[in-house]
Length: 128
Image 1 (cartoon, one colour):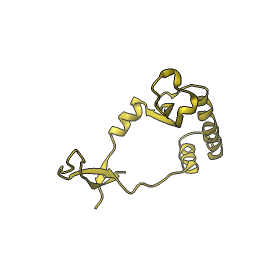
Image 2 (image 1 turned 135 degrees about the vertical axis):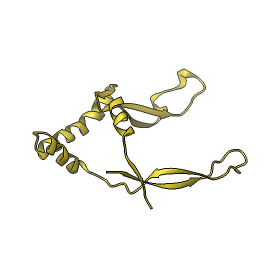
Image 3 (image 1 turned 45 degrees about the horizontal axis):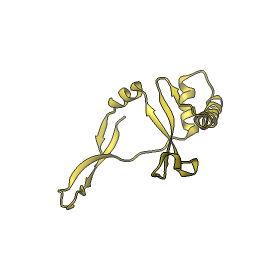
């Protein structure tokens, strides 16, 4: 099954803002699959029941932030790596930076080479 894309226009800013409009592909018509849907798909491919898989997803949902809060990166071999990142207020002196200066905490995901290679084989079709 192909992933649909549409054409979008973007006008680069630049100093003068007079750059010509450029056209780019953008993924469109996305649909959502929830935990139950993923659990049902996993169940079809394994010997685990949908309920078992939902339990594993729930456990993973609790375990990932707990491990990140312990300062660990989480590498799920052929899947990818989860890591914790922060943003904060800049200070003039290093000794002036404290945890109070952290303004945003986020989780990043870096897909594995296996996943990246699989995604390179995605079939695209222009949506009219």
